[in-house]
Image (cartoon, rainbow, N blue to C red; front, side, top):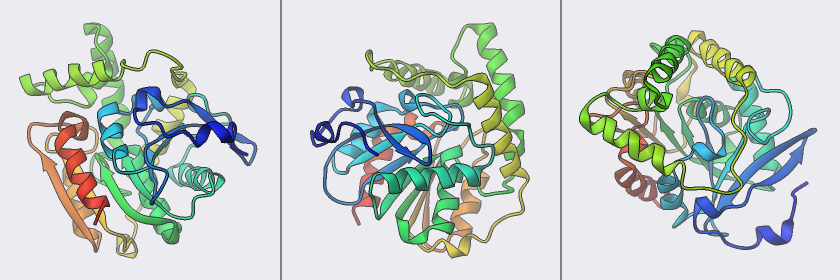
Length: 288
């Protein structure tokens, strides 16, 4: 059941102003925000490790929402969503499908970043009729090279951040070059633009559960990606430490209808560092 149906009819144009709503399905109340056009195929955002609604770059969300309805949500057991956090990518994909169908949507475009890109791949394989187009950013296939190291890298950079009094995303998402450091600071500042009705941060238990799911994904037997026939845009930074960019090249090679964009001097958060270029490319891709 969707809350506050009348209020949902108001079109919101800025992510920082989008109200947090809930929809209930299977005993779970999912928190979500939506903005943009009320017509056309909506773009559902699938987010990264440890992320809640406030971790989406407003420049990316607003840019896509200028031409599309955009919907972001908290995974089960994360942020303001209730329930127990899923411990496999496959279970997260099933949750995402349940959420999408609870909104009454028959077809969507998916933008999956990092862990969200893994979830998007499963949805596209298992529910092909639900997905029109896919954008896979900073992500990799099951069994992808280096994905099993995400836990180690996340722990290391969290310690580095604590020691230097910085946000871990400065290390995890961006390069240590002058451009990377500068882009990281700007990105983190944008995440603070929303001052009211902010989401709850992820719990330590849920964070560790998600790490376990990603580790399992990295150790899985590679899936047959040739069954994903939808158009796919694969995007990454050339110096991604969390999910090495060679995984993006692997995805693009194995997906039958894909194109690849790699941003220079950029890390895991390449779509945030190059948000203007990414939004332009995403809109062109989604609008074909």
